[in-house]
Length: 565
Ligand code: PEP
Ligand code: MG
Image (cartoon, rainbow, N blue to C red; front, side, top):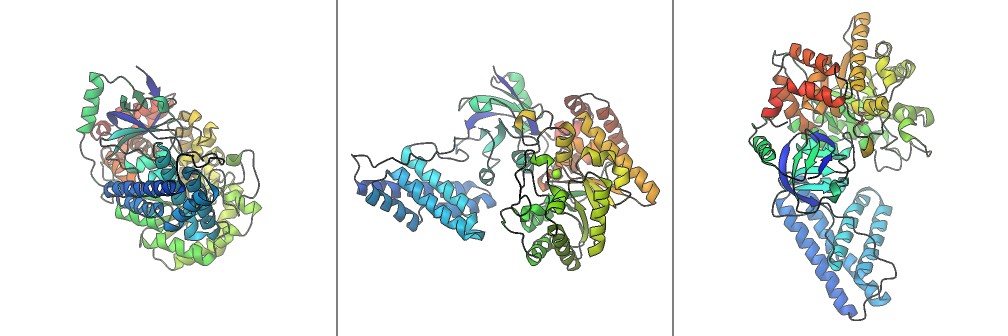
């Protein structure tokens, strides 16, 4: 028996057969010629047939996909048999004697380059063309098609990591668990798995070596994959399968004693805001404005920005919305803000710091936020990311005062901000703790590195203590100011139902998360009083490791087991 250990990102216990994510299709050798026993006409027919097969395969998958996946698959299927694409591939066979797979690869690549040069919507099709290119080449050469495998039976998907393009078509009815060898608990794949409510383990080294078809037991709460399935495993998986159904979030985060813990959503644009509103989020606790800028070579105009913020505000009329100013840099570089190569980008010019190197962008962004807010009845709060000193908080507050935006806040993402929360909250009205970055900076562990995933865990005692320090600082600042200084958590920690209880027990006022996590967090908060949450927090904080802190909190929350969380 082999056991693989990783970091569980969404709880669940399942048994199933493993399918491996296929390797990406490689570019054929540029010297590959049409074989002597194939005529150009026959090669042309083979290209057409392969394209047709790819189109039909994608359409068949679209039948079974969810709404978003269906749209993606249908549009990609049209691209597969695009006449201009096939014509230029066939021409390369006829005039230059190229092998069919090379001809398709080159024709599609030049198509993609043209689309990229056109920019805007056309440039967004580049990923589709690359996908179609790989699929036709796989069909022509007898390789396994790229992307998530298809199977008649539900399966456990093993991968190095998932590309964003793969995620649109991930169907939780087909994929019953996700296990990856790379990635961290705060990285893209983990965030997606939580959103889908899919049992998932990341950073489990070796899982890509599990032979296809092997039956395995996955316990994502314990972060382990076992290749020998025992009777005890079957009982645990059955118990999980028969768990109580998780009720939908009803739009009111409350505890067992009736005290409120507002649950907000993390969104990136109007579309995700509408989705969150549909799931009854009580507002937006984190609008990641840089998401609207990704892929832009130049700073969008104030008018364009205003329209994109307004789309988010319109999804939550009269409700609370926290807008975070641009957090460019590190894993989210923007060409017009991050102009220099850096040795350590996570410790470099990112977040609020980009205002020092490229002044003006932040001021124009604030103008756009103000314009959108004047045109909306939502309750707009604004905060800056990556703050490390009190004077940065003061400078940001002054910028907000100049445009007339209030309440004014900053994120607590650095240990410096956590230990200095009292002084920082002497300057601003609220803070939101970004536990993803606070964890990476407290533990000095890159949040994207699978090898350090065990450190990159918000249950680490040092991180819990940073959160406690922040709340205590806020309490003292509130007393001094004679007015409440709010503390929210908008990192992935808020989406972990057991950790959410600990956060509330530590004194955090509101939680913001991927909208898909609200149902679980709400159900668990409802099962405990605030007093009980405080006791659980004390218990978790007295432990000496992340695993023990987590186990101590979970042992006090029987509802987690009932709901299979
Ligand atoms: C965080 O760091 O926790 C956070 C919410 O910001 P982001 O994940 O966008 O860096
Ligand atoms: Mg952050």
